[in-house]
Length: 72
Image (cartoon, rainbow, N blue to C red; front, top):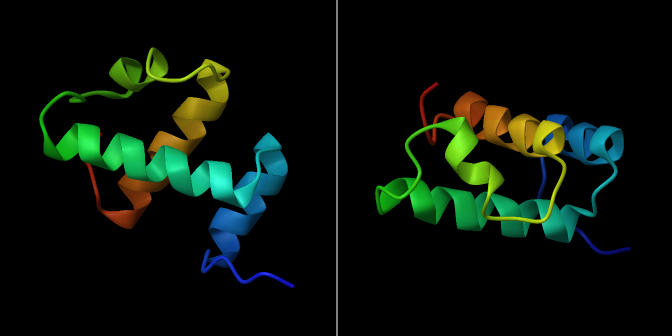
């Protein structure tokens, strides 16, 4: 069994939105870097970066807010 280092909330989110933990971590990394570089300042700006349902992207972004990486 591969350990991915996700919290229980993150594992639950991956199950609910049906994405693999590795994809989730990749999304987090890319969005976080975009935020740090100033390329992403609001949730809607992350939508165009991935070929992913906007509702799923919103849930991932909301998790970043919960983790304190960005603000709403």
